[in-house]
Amino acid sequence: MQRPRQVPFREFVLKVASRCNLACDYCYVYAGPDQTWRSQPTVMSPPIVEATARRIGEHARAHGLSRVRVGLHGGEPLLAGPAPLENVITSVHAAMPRGTQADLTVQTNGVLLDERFLTLFARHRVRVGISLDGGRQANDRHRVRADGRSSFADVTRALSLLATERYRPLFAGILCAIDLANDPLGTYRALASYCPPTLDFLLPHANWSQPPPRTRDPGDAPYADWLIPIFDEWYKAPTSSARIRLFDETLQLMLGGNSAIEAIGGGPTAFAVVQTDGEIEAVDSLKSAYHGAPSTGTSVLTHSFDEARQHPVFTGLQSGRDALCATCTSCPVVAVCGGGQYAHRYRAGHGFGHPSVYCADLSRLIGHIAGRVYSDLRRPEAGSR
Image 1 (tube, rainbow, N blue to C red):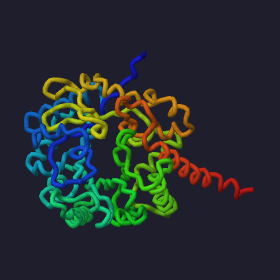
Image 2: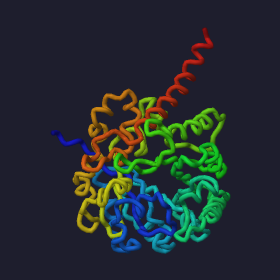
Image 3: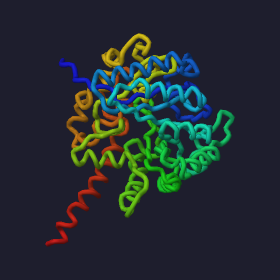
Image 4: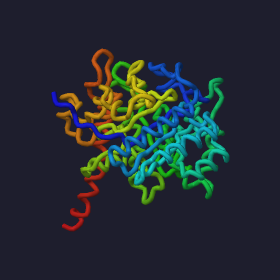
């Protein structure tokens, strides 16, 4: 069998802190089957930071990359503290070869975000993404502290800081994990009230062996039914300050383009994760499949990113649509769906060669979006008759 053509990594996720100050019960890192976080150092050390930055620069130089994206993640990355974070940021920028730009973001739960961190991020033009699941009741279903206390007030305080004129340019957007128990339009409107430039609605990380939470019969498509009212309101709005990436990428694929997100499109995965101990891993969502799923046994201390991407886990992720099963390749929406997210195809004992556990949801959502768009495209023609 011919080995699929690999693409260079263009995005790097740095786990600058391996612990978290919230206890979200759906978290694929701490509440999932992969528990490797327990043996990780709590914070990425300066030698690991230096080696990681050097490897990213080396990879950019080897492949002539004009731009790379570097995400500071955790756990909760702000637990690392301002000074260590500034060391990561300056080390990455310093390691870039001439002609390569590094775009940095930090994804945080917002609890610790204050003027100290925002001043630092403004100085280095690091954009900030916030995780929030809706209004207080919706958010507090899952995103609470270890003792059960709400995180909502602290997150909204952080969002109010990002809304100020000084820090508004740093605001990258809001991530929201879908919960069927929450009202979809209420959730959307609550998040849109913060005027984020981007909204991400994320399907819960699940698979055929660990199915997603459902409130209806298994044959239904409840996640599509949850998303469709949001799409309709978003789509018919004369103007919208928030780009909803799942919808935007679906429309892009319908027009023959490519997707920039994992959830849809089926393109090769072009990013790598570096843990606090320097191990190079594949995409984090694989942690929802089984213990050690994203591990490669490689490290920035001993391996280049080109060496790491020869590992079978990266080969599978970079196979794109070549890795899809017959059910997917014969599906009429495969050009848009792309088989859905790789991790969502897993079944214990059988690997990832299956349709997404959200197959029915993706099919219904894509069909609905296509119906709305194609109807609008036909309308001027009909009116000219």
